[in-house]
Length: 421
Image 1 (tube, rainbow, N blue to C red):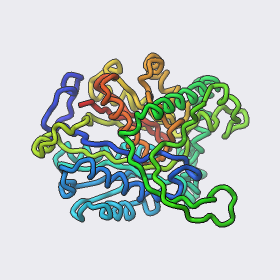
Image 2 (cartoon, helix red, strand yellow):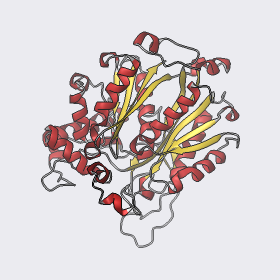
Image 3 (cartoon, rainbow, N blue to C red):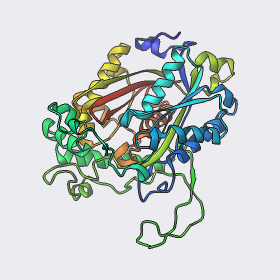
Image 4 (cartoon, helix red, strand yellow):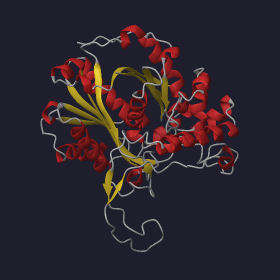
């Protein structure tokens, strides 16, 4: 049974019981309702990354993959039946089991973590942590329960009532309570788009992304009474990036959630569609399969904490210190950070609370942009972030250790540590 490695020296050392990544792939992340994947089903996108995982790892027999965890927030019936069907559809045997996970915005990071934990304790040797979400198809309720026990809506406990507070209002709360100005939020949003634009034009996302073949009806979304079927197209690029974004252009956008607020469409994450999957195994298993040279990184630990629901965006500011403390390392040991940009207000608050202003200035936080530019397909975001950070770390320019973290609706934060191979 694996023991949690503590201290930087031990974390960097290679151990037979390490939980390692062999691949971390994702679909493009596209705008809901009008983006390239608007007609795709969540399980269709999942099938795409699961098939690509087999293709990219031809020396891993499908029968060796024992369990698959899929993060999803909005899918019907928790996504379990459709995800299982997708798994079998693309060539995994019935002996490979599957379950779904819902920890809101951290669902696919939780899926990766639960697979890592299963490997670490010896329950399985090989597994996949994945995520899928079509907000185009499943966001009608705005991620708020439509059938809820009335007593909860009127609970005398404020934190209970606040669990269904609109996310945009929690953003405004963070901005007002902690002095995050509109100007700073707009500058942060523009910078996210600028970094993502540079990364996309430089081909940096290409190794992460698996193209998805879709058929989007022509005329859909343009007012046509009867959209006509069109030829299949291959979607291979994130399409939410504003390539000419500037603080000045962001300043022209109106607040969305409060008339006097500061949260806008330009400094908030986009609702999006996408999927992701990471293949993981024990290092000794990789060695026995002669796959040592295919290892791209290792999973070194994760932590979840709770925070007040009405300022859920502060979650990373508490999850990250808890993670670093549990692993007995310091923030100075971290080379690159992926901190989800649910809103510029909360991302900036977390950067400042954690004392990471210099890391932000140096381009070590979300160096390829974040959810403001790329989008936030709830159940797939954690997997997307792991894919991106492993790809970025593979360049060898930002150190050997990285952190992935995000806030979580209803008031939580999650953080995980990954190590470059």
